[in-house]
Image 1: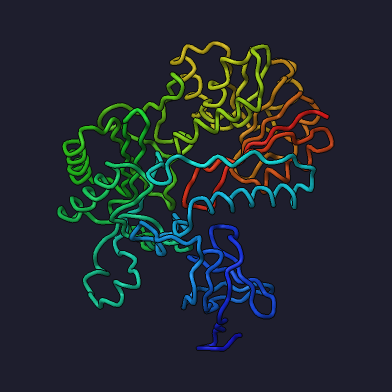
Image 2 (image 1 turned 180 degrees about the vertical axis):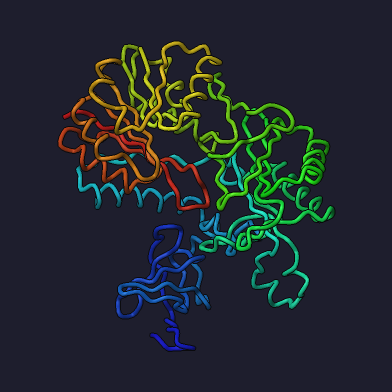
Length: 471
């Protein structure tokens, strides 16, 4: 049943049917339109107030619960609902895994339209909280107020600065975070201490609309070795205030391995084109995996769940089925972690990556690990990965590819078909683009193994590993 209230439709007694894309859940209106609703769990029965109407669907929110799903649990985080980071925290973990597995299957089947083997069980994460090794927080001179704070009518709250996460879909709004359950301590202690010290010493927090203020972002990286990196991004130079804050961080948290800063006065927060300055310690932290050590600097890409990255790489190596005689190509190699991880089982590994700094790191890591059968090359994949390159380095027996969310360029897919390696191991953080690419490869390759891997508990994100073998 539906009724109107202040020009918005309210649907009553709506059963939540499924978990959808981007962490929202799915229901059906009485006339069949899809409704996308956040912060509910499949099986909940709710009244829904629509917020937006599109041609074929609504966006809404639950305003009343008639009954709760048996798969619902109480979120542990006080910021759940306002913060968009852990949208599935109100769902039992086994159900999270079920819906992630279902998403991968649906994408491969509906988008790929290919024959699939029986999926191997999705690999859950041993840690469902405090698993991330990298967190980024924003400073704001005006905090976002949640419903409870608004109702309190405490006018002073709106004047307090914030250090936390962007509100979903609001680039200039920051939710102040007291305790985040994604990164192990001392992450929370470091962030809270920095905020308190900055406020006490009248340091200005960034205003994204007016482009003013001293403190812009905070990045904290940790490693399984116990090493810690902290990077403060300042919008403008103020040597006295900058050194005051950095000296305080260094004195208060002596366990920090790498303390860095950057002065970034441009329109966005991205660091990749910035000159990062080392203040104390060294420019990198070290991660360890099976005796291999990988340096991670402020700009490095590294899987953000270290423990589960190890499991992901083991599955990748297992799918490759290396005997020690194979030439392996590792496409989109990043800092060469997968390449070096599989190298002891291969004759030679060739890594290719578009980011020059990543290739520098890859070569340094190989030298650090005394690995002599890995070579790394920089360039745009669709340009570098060509006939001359293959002639120079040899035809691969196995190709491992781990592209970004957009998947592989069609020219790269065509080259894979042309080369005809015996096996392709395709690692993806986006099974939709993975399915698109696999559909193009289907003329020459058959999918023989599939295993999803949960790298990000409490979220809808999922990695997937596929083995393709030449027909």
